[in-house]
Image 1 (cartoon, rainbow, N blue to C red):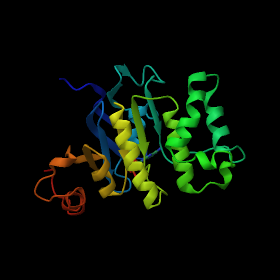
Image 2: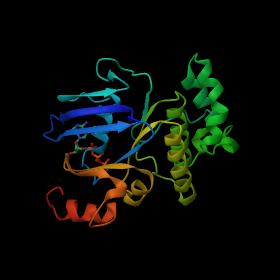
Image 3: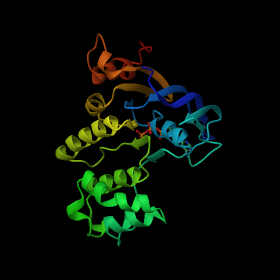
Image 4: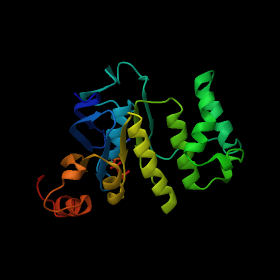
Length: 239
Ligand SMILES: Nc1ncnc2c1ncn2[C@@H]1O[C@H](COP(=O)(O)OP(=O)(O)OP(=O)(O)O)[C@@H](O)[C@H]1O
């Protein structure tokens, strides 16, 4: 059975006027799989994610999601993401914030109770978001991403601010998104979390790919963390 490819980034590169360059990077994402982006601060994870969701225009290369060019057809139906820390109206409750995001879309509004449950915020749904912890806002941000029932879910640093229970919850969430047939792209500094959640990984350093592959097939060094220190820290060539 062929695997359905939902995301194809082909040689994307972003040249910032500041002189920083991210790319060229090529990657593919398939239905039911999670791809983890890892790398140190400034490695290019957020820039790459922005190019995938269409928030940043590549100077070179293309990104096709669900068969559509993200630059030509924004917003791409089936694509939803959370890039950097999510912002909400602090005086509105979690439920109201999600409601506002739905506009007139009834199907999305009807999904709110289930999503609040899924992100473990049902008990706090009526409280103003201004009183939420960082981890609660993160989870509400993930609920907002899922409102659209996307095929492709992009999450930049989704485990930021999550406590150990939250991290365990997140692992289960990724597993359930994959089981539903979604493709998940996530970034994290927490290498063991990427290892736990991702089927595939792309390791960036100073804007370029230094290692990539299937997370379960990391050979020699054993773990993503050891691979990271063996390549990024020592400046070794990509294996
Ligand atoms: N809007 C921008 N203007 C100029 N340079 C930028 C901009 N955004 C990112 N950069 C530069 O591009 C490079 C990659 O940054 P990026 O934020 O993508 O890295 P990152 O891996 O997400 O880092 P972090 O883990 O710290 O969030 C860095 O050198 C950064 O300074």
